Image (cartoon, rainbow, N blue to C red):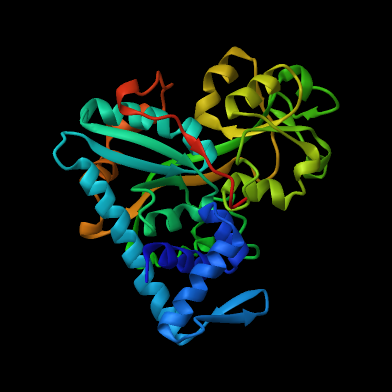
Length: 347
């Protein structure tokens, strides 16, 4: 029994198919199938069988999945500890949704590493639904992103709640979630673009009916259509899909195109306050907006959490962290930060 075999089986068990596991691990499907076959022979158990819509674990497969996940996680933790041994540097791996990796994590880490100069950080940008899996597999120390959007039929997800009705994180008892910032998402446009055919009630904002949303040209950054986030769920609920969307390399680039009059975007209100004050952008009055949500930091509980992860989890709830999130980032010191890695294997 090898770590490679266990890692392959854990991926199959979590993702529900050999194909998805191969994509996740960046290996071929025959490699995953071969690893699982070797485990079946050694343990004398089929581990899983085909079922409608995927696979079903056998009783032995369920026991192996729980134990294998812990073994693989401990191996990753041991690698990290060996890297840190004999040095004064601590390594912190932060997983985040793509909008958070661009707009939230940089100013947060900039402020954090000023207080903890011994920490070297890296950021992994992923879809929201795999954040908890990365923590459980020890491929990330802290995950940052919005609380999940409400499931269909379980609430709008754009009211005053945090969208927790749709939270179905695996092994929730193993992971602690720390809410640290309430946010509002608003639809913005350039004043000259927004003024075309829209109505204004007195001195109020321009109104855009919901029926027009799918027909508008939307300019978004990577990951903003992710249905597991409050913003992505709002757009999907009102028929905004890939056909009406242009995806830009970054949210900043998308907002620059919006300011030029090329379309609409959904963005964090506090990050465009200067543009709103200077009149380069305007907020549209649309039913169901602003979309309210809560940002949270997630990490493993207890002694399975690294000291650097514990320090960041404590920091996110401090006034200093809040100030950093409400201001513009000037960049994390280069010696303590690696460029964000964008992963879209699970999209």
